[in-house]
Length: 267
Image (tube, rainbow, N blue to C red):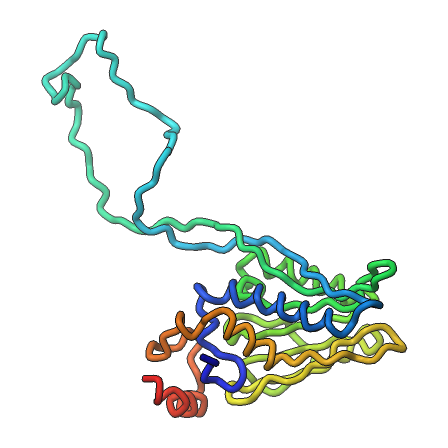
């Protein structure tokens, strides 16, 4: 079943769904681009491993080796009158509070690169922003900005696709219309000017121009068709409960009213 949203589905922004969607999106983009740009160019997936902090709930853990062990030797004398022959010295104070531990788990994310087939020179980098790229407290936030700066200082084009409403986006020098989603294209020959697609929640996703090297023309990338294909193949309709509240951030009043009407048949 297709998504009920005409463009980006904000329910996909859930943490349990987003990593799978992110990498499937990159894979589908690569496939569609390679149908158009060969043999002079090719598109390749580029993996990047970062770390995501998760809460570790109560669970049974096997094969734990402690830093300090307490052993009983049967051939040694016992002391005191405690249970098992051990001396009872002091009453143990139970912990007054329980919580959950935070744990870093590896998170592999993909971007797409278009390169020349003869010498593998980078032509266009397509970056799909992820939540860790938009969290100023996360190492991946600074890693991405360093990578972005390097591409901006090179002869390669950069396309940034931001399909996440939450987080801190890379800043632009001049104000742009407010929107939940954006696509930004920085052509190497037009910097510092960039092309911007502000995307509203109720509108279809655009067909984007992916630049190559002159004299070759831009190739089209139908972002709406890509997202729809990934949604269908990923079976997200079976994973999303549209009766539950939307992940943060909150919608505007206009967006909330529009979405209530859109999802009413599903609730």
